[in-house]
Image 1: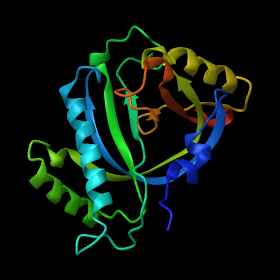
Image 2 (image 1 turned 90 degrees about the horizontal axis):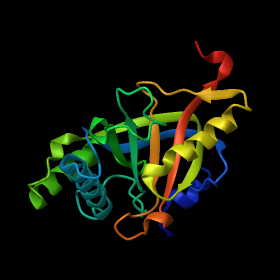
Image 3 (image 1 turned 180 degrees about the vertical axis):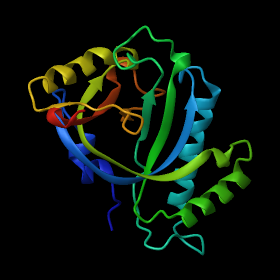
Image 4 (image 1 turned 30 degrees about the horizontal axis):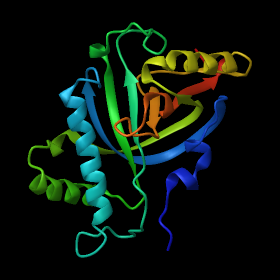
Length: 217
């Protein structure tokens, strides 16, 4: 049986073009870690990413024996994602914002068979292998993002403002508007590994929640 690759299975969610598009994102299961600070220098962010990948690959490799989750199927571990915000209302377009003020929830999507039991088993296994990681910081969540606008950003993360402005210009000609809130955040999906990819070749999906203009209070 071929491995399930969500990027290929749901291309509309993972391969937007350089032109904004509207998508409806269904409920997904994620392993999530909350934190704050500049991701470029924050040890907390580095540890969060290591924890997310550690747990994700632990679940993926538990495909035999008593630890194998019911309904297991072969799959490709989805990409790292991040939800970002700050107390600065201009977070999305303010390129001068102090990155130390960033608040974030980093996540990796999980297959549908991942239950709380499978997640807790993975934490127990990983804690023995990598005791330096704080497995208690991770949580398993279900999240439905719903109606969104998204676009592919090419290049440096520091240059996202111009791409976000393209989305805003696109929305201004539609019946929709941005709907950022405490439960709906600036969302990035990282399709490139910055350790192995030159800055100008980085590909990042930027996704914003939206709502109908006449629904906004």
